Image 1 (cartoon, one colour):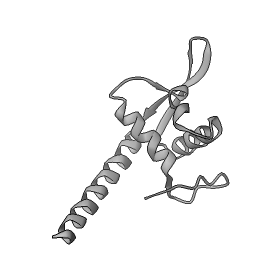
Image 2 (cartoon, one colour):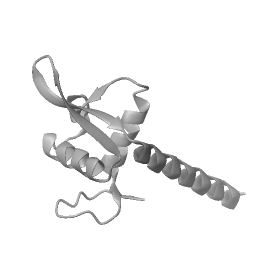
Image 3 (cartoon, rainbow, N blue to C red):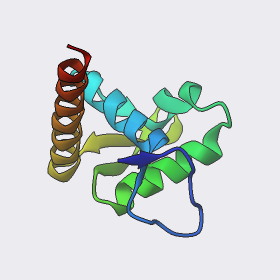
Image 4 (cartoon, rainbow, N blue to C red):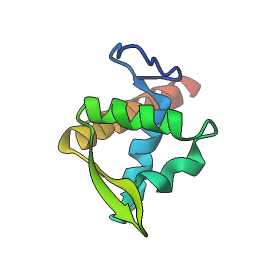
Length: 107
């Protein structure tokens, strides 16, 4: 359902693991406002991979990135769209089904 490789040329229909991680971070924030600079520590390669990830999620209409300013520093407020929530729900359902199949096969 996702790919670890960020294809900087074009999107092939697979969500990168970085993008999935950002969606999960946004979901786990529990309503707390999340800005781009809040996520930079999760990216070992820094702002370039984070920028590409946000671009990928925005292109897929999984997030909305609204320009903002925090303490005089320009950033973007990130919010999950309905489509992003739907993707996460389907991903969770598939994960649960796979886990149940795994448990059935173990017994």
